[in-house]
Image 1 (spheres, rainbow, N blue to C red):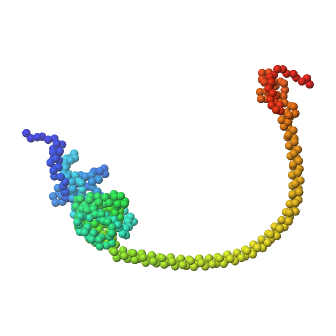
Image 2: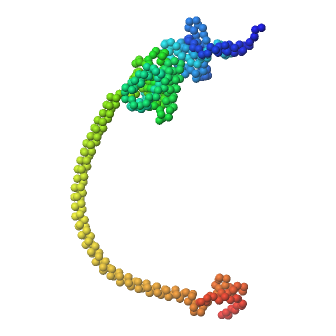
Image 3: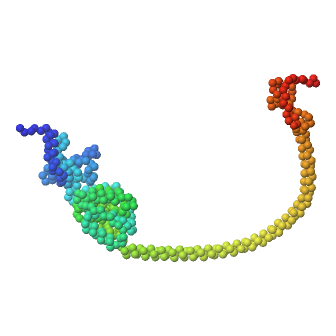
Length: 422
C-alpha cells in the first residue's frame, strides 16, 4: 500500500529532494520586485521566451545592490530552489541578484553611480594627496597577472627603494568582491607603523562584465572608508569604473599606476638640483639682506654714538656747573651748621644736666617707698593664710600667723586680741 503524506510532509520531502541541486544561477526578466517591512524582498522572475515564472525571495541585507535593481531588468539570480509559504509556491531563495546583459547592467550601473555621487563618494575635496616618495606600497592584483608584472617592472625602472607588500586577489568572478574587500581591510587594520603609505588596486582591461567587481557597490564603499590613500588602475584608457571614481587617484593603466606612485630617477635628480639651486638662491638672498641690514645697523650705530658723544660732552659741562653751585651751597650750609651746632651743644648739655637731677630725685623717692627699707627700720608685715592682716577682725583663731621682718619670718599662734581704745 502506498504511503499517504500530509501536505506539510510532502512539502518537506520535496525540499529534501531539491536540496542536492545546491546553488544554482537562474537568468530571466525581473518582472516584479517588492520590499516588505524593510526586511523581506519578494519578486517574480520570468522566462521572456516561454513566459514561465518562478517566485523570488530574499533578505534585504543580502542584496547589497538592491537600490540598483529595477523591474523589467534582465538579471541572474544565485540561490537555492525551495517550496515555501502558505501557498506552497516553488521559488528561489536568492543570495545575489546581478543584472545580466549589457543593457540591464548599464541601467543598474548608471543608477548606482548617481546614488553614490549624491552621497559624496566622488567629491574631489575628500581625495587625499599621495606621498612624493613612498617607502611602503600595498599592491592588490591577480597573482601572476600582466597587471602585476607591468606594475613591478615600471616600479623597478623608476626611483623605487621602498617596500611593496603584495596581496593577491581575484579581480573578476564570484570570489573577486570578497577577496578585494578583505585585502583592503587587511592593509587598513595594520598598526599605523606597519601600514603602507598608499594602496594600489589594479587589473587588466576587459568587457563591462569582466570589470563587474570594480563597479561593485561594496568595493566602492570599502575604498571610500579606507584610511590609506588608494590608487586604482584598471585596464585601458577608456575603462572607467566606480572604483576609479571613488579612489584618491585614478590611473589609466596598471603601468600608469606605477608611474603615479614612483618618480623617475631623472625627476628625482631634477628635484635635487632644483632644491640645491633654490637653497643657493635663498642663501644668497639672505646674505644680501644681512649685508644691507648690517650696513644700515652700522650707519645707525655711528649716528647713535656721535649723538651720544655730543650729549655726553654737553652733560659734562652742565654737570660741572651744577657741582660748583652745589659745593658753594654746601659750604654755606656747613658754616651755618657750625654756628647752630655750638648753640645746640650748649643747650643739649643744660638739658641733660636737668634731666639727671630729676632722675636722681625720683630714684631717692622710689627708694623711700621700698618696703624692705621700712622693715629695716623696725616695722613688720603680719600675714595669715597668705593674706596681709591690717585689722584684728581679719584674724582667725585656728590659723598660724606669719610676721615678716627685715631678716626673716616669725611664725606664731593666735591666742587673744586686744583692740586699741583710741
